[in-house]
Length: 256
Length: 254
Image (cartoon, each protein chain N blue to C red):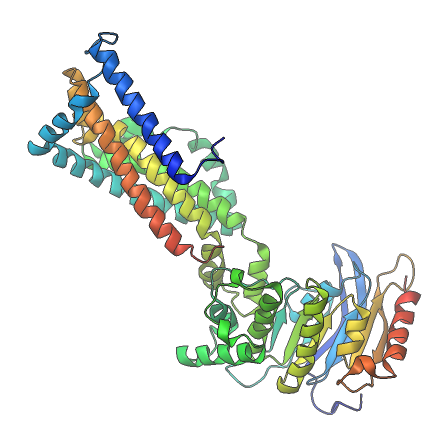
């Protein structure tokens, strides 16, 4: 983890997270130290509990055991974390601008500041022209961009992304992946990104956390955490890309 | 199959159907096929309406009925929406009221007439009370099911963006997301209100219903028909105005 100043306090620290239904654990023993501005991808077979883990890290649901800390910031006009969902989940009764303002409501911002703060991330995802449109007039890719702008507007220290591109067509997905790479240079957030697409994980992340079953009858856990020591630009063309991909695949294959 | 007809043609056929009905009715009376004591001549209605208006009776009874109607509608809709939304959002309220609602719901609004008279006397409040009961149940059920069927994903979005308080979620998720259903209930209540307005006035509270009873006891069937048509026209006006409001409020819908 040379790329990140591990001396700084982490953006998120999780210890011993256990998740499940009733008394049955599905996923157990998850630890994570997320460094400021770091991008961690979480991969694993469907049903292993990736999205549930993301919600537990965000505090949207309580884990059976374990603790999550997202150290509070000092700024009163930001939020500690925000989330991009698999479906865009925009409020259809609000215009694009109103959707992006959602997380800003309740922060100490004037109306004018709020409008301004909503336009900035919209410009970042290239949709400031569409600020006054209704969500249903947007394409699926545009809606997901609004979802990303909504999450960036609160200037989160941790951004949770739950398979944000999996519902999009291949062309749009590629374009948004590239936009996310570009966005990282301008956004301050550390990112936890859940995906079932190994290539996407290796393409975007600094670290890939592989979840999987370790022994029959036992809850799944973290099989491996792999650093991706590749430059962000044109990663697909990098000679090391295939090796990283194989390494992740090997660990997923070994899990049951 | 009306799918193959143009809009223009459908309107035309609608007018033809109505005109044919009135013509057959007129002919049946004039030929003596139907006795004149049972139904009035359609061609006589406009003159009767003009007489009712020039006597000032029409305006008087319509104003009175409108007053009962608006108060009953307002009270019934408001209470129905409040109780429906509260029951849908608060499990304790839901459980508390479930059996009571099951008990009271099958009672038709008109069955409350004895209590309306005992509690309010023969006066406008009693009519408004009867009207509000029917309107209440329609709005209650519409809002309850509309709020219950709001996508829980929206609630998660609200929580993910710091809007986790009850009031914030009510104002930012539950009410706007359920608005189509709630407005649908309001519109249905608008119609239901007119159905009960006449019945609520039959027992002597001044209004359209009382005037119709008066007329029927004198066998003045033409006056009865004038007020039947009046109710139809008032309903059409209210429904049209509400439809405009509904479209405006739901302009976010595809």
